[in-house]
Length: 97
Image 1: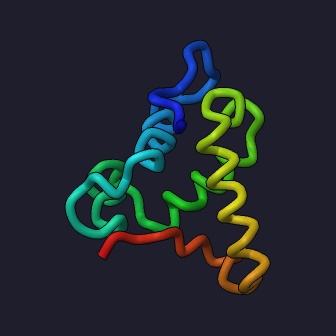
Image 2 (image 1 turned 90 degrees about the horizontal axis):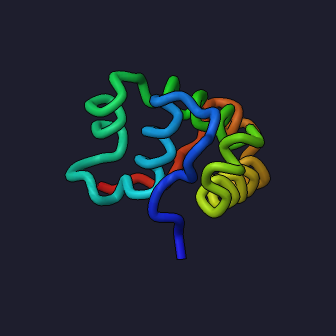
């Protein structure tokens, strides 16, 4: 079962906590994921995924939300294996259409 919330005592910033919470349940938001990213974080999609990619490589994120971070890391590795050139531009994470 997925973690309900981040573990207390993490060294993550408020933005990083919000990003992980969003990734845990982004499909609950109406519309496309890109639009929700812009609305909730006021970031470009590329900027959001740069932050997310850096975040999932960090030990403190893994400690705070191990199941989610492992799932996101596995997806990112799979995407890179399928298309390394595309992965350099940022992940094309599953999007709700």
